[in-house]
Length: 287
Image 1 (cartoon, rainbow, N blue to C red):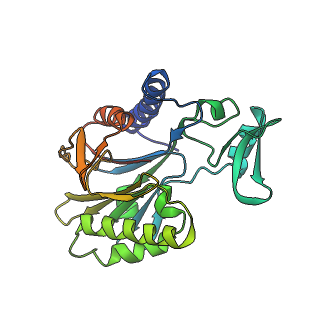
Image 2: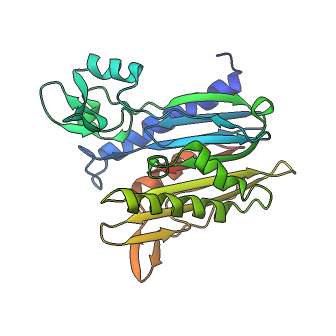
């Protein structure tokens, strides 16, 4: 793919950001990332380009002026041929549990770690057998894709909802551009499906960015987390939507239903790296 020196620099800076974040988390005494980690998807928007960097199975899609869906990222599942090839070459294997559930990454001669994605931040054990923290980057020309809205969400949304289902909800808010209510409805719909389908509920996060008529941006975000016993809705937490220098005023701690939830240190670390991308809009989702 041909790109200018400016855009090449942006892509290299994003890769460096992911690498620095991974090293920071792995060396931190605050986290045990031997068998735990996170996905991350970033959408970096300049005046003429949309650059999407994804690591894991969070996802970003774009809705254009014709109402069509443009896939900005690719879910990193172990069964994808190129991802599987890398894992096997590193001494891992890709298999399901007794032929059920998602494909997972295992050591060739051991039933561990069982990670259901092929790229992640953290997960140092899985990285020994080919799981990667290098983001996959796709670049799009804004004039070609003609964006109306961008959706960035964790797999808590995409596990049971299709791109079309999410787009149908977004269309209800397309003209009033109520990004917050749109993201909230998507999260609540996903959580409703989880409750009717699974005994557990994944963390569900969604960021919406509408492109307005004056070339500005209207962002909203909504988060649903579960502590295993109770669900909590978080309109603004350790998940950020940045617009033209604007950022939500995040507190290091927030109170929800008198329960204090500490904003993740690793997400704040991610924020610091995101802040290094200047003169653009950065939208990211961190699960």
